[in-house]
Every structure is written in structure tokens, then in C-alpha cells.
Amino acid sequence: MEQVMYQVSTLQALAMGYSRAVVSVDEFLKNGDIGLGTFENVDGEMIMVDGKCYRAQEDGAVVQAEGNMGVPFAVTTFFAEGKDFSVQDIEDIDKLKQILDVKIEEDFGLNSMHMVRIDGSFSKVCARSESAYRSHHVSLKDILKETQKDFFFDDIKGTLVCVYFPDHMDGINAPGWHLHFVSEDRTHGGHVFDLKMNQGEGTINKISRIQIELPTTPAFDTYSLKEASQDEIEEVEQGKG
Image 1 (tube, rainbow, N blue to C red):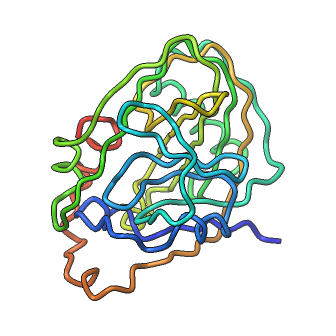
Image 2: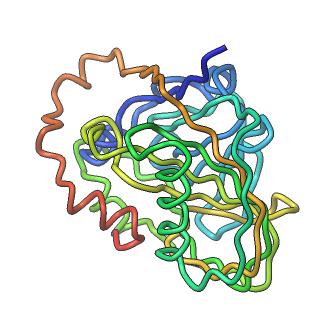
Image 3: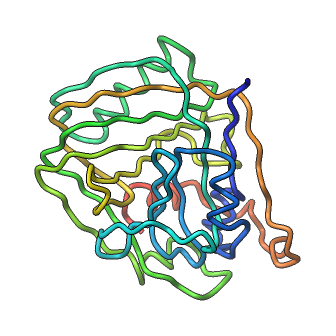
């Protein structure tokens, strides 16, 4: 069966402030077993691993997400056997992204979507999460200025969920890599903006098909998504919201 990337809404819609629920966590889980995203009103970071959906709270503590929680933006797929690889002595997130770029370019090509899982040990993970912001038509960047909390995990084992979208899909999702982390004991995690990895074992899944679940509320059509700034999205991705 062809592997599908299932996406709720678009990152551009979230960037412009559309943070209402589109589907529930239970509905989202029917479409994959690994992924990442956020929750209604940007109430924490989502990390999905092994068919379980976790929510990183504003202090970096992780809890299992309740099935009736709303999802405004997220991506998932059913993880399959893929291209395995090993990494070690990764000094920062830019180095890891460079390595991942080379691997997908050599083995698959940069014009497809990719889901990557890396289990490893880290000397440091720099991450963020946030608390709920109940307002609409407020940009994600402005929301994170009010609610984002940064935290650091030292000498920790865990899983990176890494999603790649190609440049030509800008407008659907942010081009490049988007990484979330959850600890091995599933108690800590968040959106990753830097790291130092001792070693890791990874698997790459190439995905050539996407299904997008757009919001159906009239409010969605009041947003001018073309105004979503790529620079602002990149700042948010890098933890500078």
C-alpha cells in the first residue's frame, strides 16, 4: 500500500492564527502512528510515536494527549520499513539537518516528503513548548512571544520525530526539516531548536502522497493565508517566536 502523509490544515493557516480544532486526537490517530504538530489554541507541542500521541506542556513535561483534544495542525503517517542509518557526534541541529539532507538526496531525492525517526542519546536537547492562547487572528509568532517557554534536557535518551517537506510544497507546509523530541521514558519533550547528539539509530520513510484535512468552518475563509511570512515561519521553527 502506498504510504500517505496525512496533514491537518496548513502551517500557513496556523502561522496566521487559525488554531481552532479541525479534528480530534482520536480522529488524527486513525491516520498514522508517528508524527508531530500542536493542539487547539496552541496548547503545547505534539509528538506521536508508536501510535501514541503525547503533549509536551509549557514546562517540557510530557503527558499522553486525551482523545477528545482538538488538533489545528499536525502531520502523521504509518511508519514502515525504510532506509536505516546511524549518526554520531552531532554538534548541533544544523549539522543533523545537513546529514539528513545528504541522505535523502543520495537515496531518494529532495523533491519528496520524508518522515524520519531517530532513537539516540543526547548530551543536550534545546526545546520549547507553550500554554494555550485563546484568541484568533493573532499570528503564531505573536502568540509564542506571550506563551513560549524554552527548556534544556541534559544527558538524555529519547526519540526525534523529523518531518521533511520539499521547497516546491511551500504554501502547504514549511520547506525543510521540523523536529520534535520525546524522552525514552516519555516524560519530557518539545519542539527542538538545537541539540547535541552522542549517537543515534534512524530510519527514513519516503512519502509521495499527501492527504490534507482543511478546516470546514466559515472562519477559515476569513484568513488571508498568502500573507503568511516565510521569514516569520522560519523564526518560529528556530525557536525565536
